[in-house]
Image 1 (cartoon, one colour):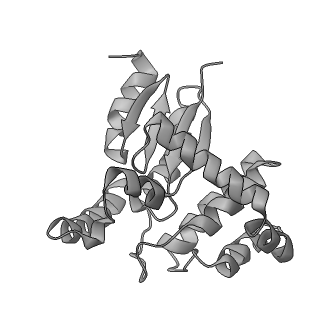
Image 2 (tube, rainbow, N blue to C red):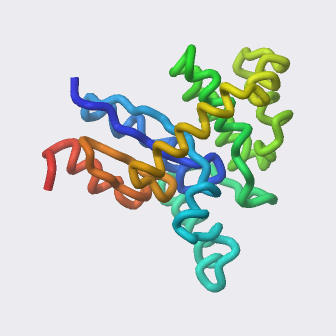
Length: 200
């Protein structure tokens, strides 16, 4: 089997959300699977010096316009959250906690968390909201809240973020395919060609 695609994203990233809707179908067309790897852009920005898009003069206003247009282009439901961006430790920890025993379930949780934030305008930075979303998928609220405070789960997320930074991941979405990095959903055409015809 061909190597998996590594998909790095932050739960606060609109472009990460759009990519999350599409990446598994794209990969499946080429007999690939996808490793989902949530990261924390805040940790990355401390190294790159970048800032959240809405805080940037000129670019911030354009970015919101482009996000809405990109969602329409891809046919994906999207509502700009009232609180944006947000810290995403809670959803990322919940993902890795569930992924340790149920990778498919962790992907379902990721989709549900993205939808809660980018469609239903729910603040998933809150451990309580993240737990509420997980409950809709059959998880126990107390178990989720305990996991979010668990030192081992916190260390797992930290180690994943550190490993991503070491690899050179600096944005969301970010893909590594056969050792080749691709940044952004606007690289999907290149990814499709790479997967279908090989390196170029």
